[in-house]
Image (cartoon, rainbow, N blue to C red):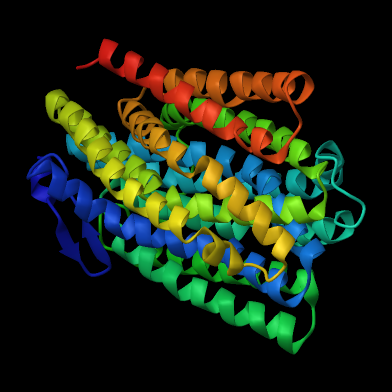
Length: 452
């Protein structure tokens, strides 16, 4: 029955059946819109960083950049829930169980609205304690508080958009979320410049620009889901949480969410190690992290593609195809990432210079980029394999492996190296690759031991 829905165009988009056709082509066609969409989504915070770095100052740049870890704690936890919903919806789609798919969509969105209220309160409440935990310098603290308070007051827009686009991804529709994201990213750039250059609102201006743009993206995705004639339509009168489906979603999503929160908390401690070197180093670390995120775009997009590919094929009973798709996705991701990493290594000064003209900040940014960039190849394996395992409904294994490597081993390394070797920016920055490489090795061993 699943074949009846193979890439069927409708009035408001299309669904893609990934249980048929050439594997590499299916993965490529699915992941490309995701990657472009991820670029636009990253532009929200990246444009904030560029604007404050060039038009407000180094302290504002350090404030916006250092808040990323705190924002990620809630957003990544929610994204775990989104992954769980996508896997469940993908399974129903692959199995052709459209009534259950409809119920899963209603359950997912009902839970999302409740989570939005909770996360707004939690986010605003944790701002000051988390900034203190990160040992945020006094010259950065007030602007970081301002940015985060505004951001979390409007976080519902981001959460609703992410969940709505996750529903669409589960049935193979990546085009319309991309178009909405492109539109609102351009709106964010316009509002950033208007608030900062026109109204001189400083760091509060870039925060409001992001919040308003994300609200527009949420409204657009809700309008699409409500008016669509496709299988993923949101019917407001049916909006309720089905207990059995919610349990399935949490079974897959909670491990991913918990892993993301604990990893983000671990990265807050990494940020605290960086913060002791002052605002210039903090700003350099922030610019490196933004560039690092762009390098990770192909692997993140292919990881999402592998989750949908595997979940649909498992739902259709095509286990061997799911396995072949996983390793194909890894090979494709490695090929793209090595090219991007090489380009950023060669043009590191120019890349960091996009964010700031401060020579000291540029020096730190280039230092971190040169030290870490090629280690990201290990993360290609980490992300795609974890995505594939979640697509099979196994979220526990990647959670345990990533917590071991990204939290326990990384924190042990930072503790030991800063106390018994040397406390330098480069050695602190290498805490990331220690986690990436160890995770890559363990995940490969686990995946080969549990091949279908």
